[in-house]
Length: 153
Ligand SMILES: [Zn+2]
Image (cartoon, rainbow, N blue to C red; front, top):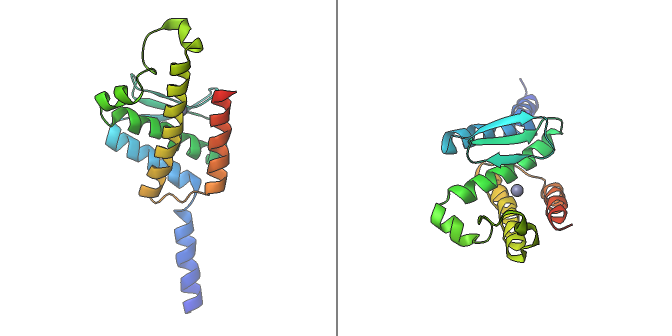
C-alpha cells in the first residue's frame, strides 16, 4: 500500500467516527453512564428532559443534526439540575415555585426560565467540546437562537 492510500484509509476510518449518528450514540452512553438517564426517540412536538422518569425524549422524525443539537441542549438541562440541588434552586428561584396558572404572567418566572434555557444551550456546547464532538458552530448557533427566540415570542 502506498503512503497516499494509507493516509486516505485512515481519514476514511476517522470519518466513520465523525458523524452525527456516532455523536448521538456517544451522548446517549455518556448520559446513561454519568446520570443514569435513558434517551428515547419518540413522536413528540419537541424534545424534553423528564427528571422524575430519568428520561430524555427526542423527536423521532428529525434530521440527525437536529437530534444531536436537541440532545446536547437537554443534557445541558441535566447538567444544570444535577450540579447540586441547592445551587440549582438558588440559581433559578422563580423557575420552580408552585404558583399555578399565575406563572404565565409572572415576569420573574419567565425570565428565570429564559436564563435556564440559555444556560442549558451553553452547557450543551461546553459538553460537546469536552467530548470532542465537532460542532458546526454557525449551524448550532442558528438552531439555538431559533429556540431561544421561540421562548420569547
Ligand atoms: Zn430547554
